[in-house]
Length: 142
Image 1 (cartoon, one colour):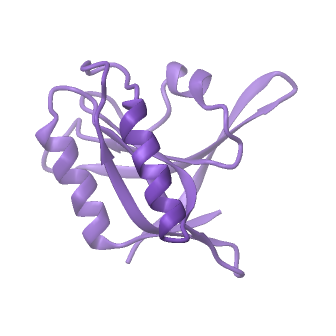
Image 2 (cartoon, helix red, strand yellow):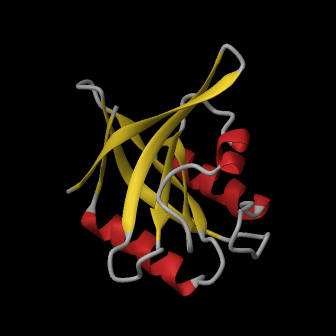
Image 3 (cartoon, rainbow, N blue to C red):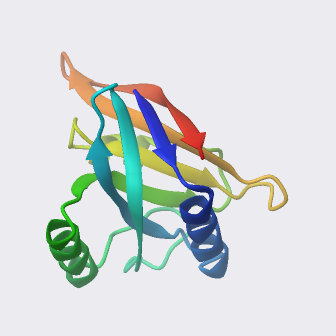
């Protein structure tokens, strides 16, 4: 799967994640699935991590509902979520995998381990024969 995100949306995620340090930041991504198989992110939602920790996140349900209503009002499809890893690499943790229950979602993870070299990757997680299988998706910043 190929995913595109605008430079502006990428910078919004990065800015929100930096402002929330040392906690994980989180949000949702919405857009459309294009006929060529590309998943285009058209809007990024910067939401509140109600866990207020650097080890995991929970999206504020009120924020999530507001974002879903906005997606519907703008003809966008929920494509997945994003969160930051303040102190670890850009890959799903064991908890991320355990909580990844939507096989249609893309999971974007921004690592801020090296403040000067943030890394954003996208992943697909699905359960196969009772095991969580993680595949890295091609992420293009346009």
